[in-house]
Image 1 (cartoon, one colour):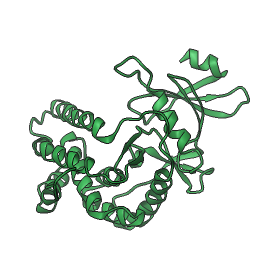
Image 2 (spheres, rainbow, N blue to C red):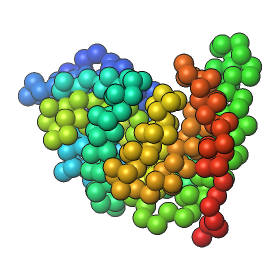
Image 3 (tube, rainbow, N blue to C red):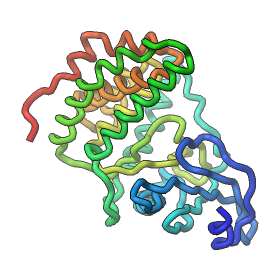
Length: 287
């Protein structure tokens, strides 16, 4: 951290909460402006993870949908601080669905309009095994800490079906795009400088099917809203509805397996439904 602070002449402030992978700090630059210093983790191959995020943020610079990248090194990011920087009060009330979908749709449309950066980013099918590994690890942690050995079991049992569906969807993607990679409500904050009024933070950028992004966002919602949000968001962004719903089924299985949710029972009921089971069945041969 001190090396990055010296490099940019920063005065480091308090740690900022919300991220689980990176160390993030409030800071002031030499001119007294509020900025954010982000230190992503080192990758398994020993290289820093900042370059991929910097490449994506650079591609999104003119969209008004992502936090502004001020500068970057191989292992650190200097970011503009979003103000007011509040999270959306995403509630479980159905009355909140319209505004939520409108904001998400505008952000996604802007993000997807950006060109793919020259930096070599992983594809969604390349990172999918890591998502599954995280789901299994989260399940083990929740089972152990709660003393509930069967918690998340239904989701764990459905992970092979989700993997098969994800593989089919990935290999039948016609127009892969630059994806945020972690487009969920906790990574959306208010910004007076954005034409949308909101910006995204903390991308894990990948190249893949935009329907996967719709599905990930929807699956993070309360159980009763998951499928309605997915359908509404797909229609709003012009993405094929069934593919988006199929991705939603995939990520909802992951949510059930991770076993951290307050509405765990409702999510388990959803993935056991005939609707979700049908969505996990491939429609036709992969390319």
